[in-house]
Image (cartoon, rainbow over all chains, first blue to last red; front, side, top):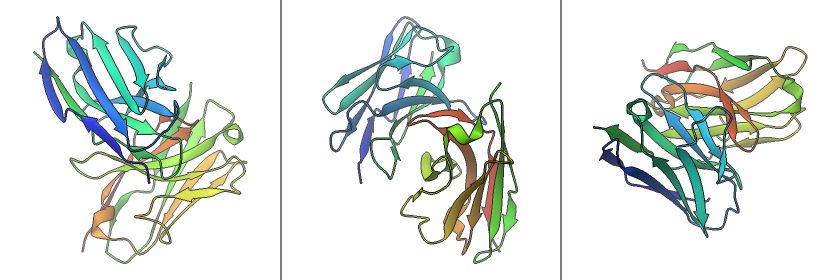
Length: 107
Length: 116
């Protein structure tokens, strides 16, 4: 099974910062990597697919990148509404596996 | 508008069975793989199972293989998850998701509690 190591587990950032969350795959997954945001009591929402493509309706301050088996989600000048938990998902091979999640708090 | 609405959750005793349903609308159901993803209380997301367009191929996570069965009825645009031999560790919110190699649409979730 492919393991997804996500970091950090939590972070607190100001509205002026650039926030970066990373996921490292235990083996190659091409670009079969997506990112999700989940707010308390809500279902996850797709942000990024194919490692770098922005999902419909997602603000352009969100972006994704890839370097080998390491993937990053960047939030430029985050808004208070961006608080929540972020997950990566690899769908290159079953079992599909999620990262453990990153809890983002904006201050 | 894409909509996925789960139903069938609740409280069930260990060892018993439960069947979840997910009614889909707003898209051509048979054009997509579908999946179930669960989330235990205060925990992360766990992929449970996926099913191909016509249901001929199914895929399961190791923790549910042999106990859970995913199926679909394209005429009714409905996805199912039959859960047998339930354990306390199956307690979770179960989400139905459209599986397009990404989970690009999610239901609101159905809560399943396994307890005596």
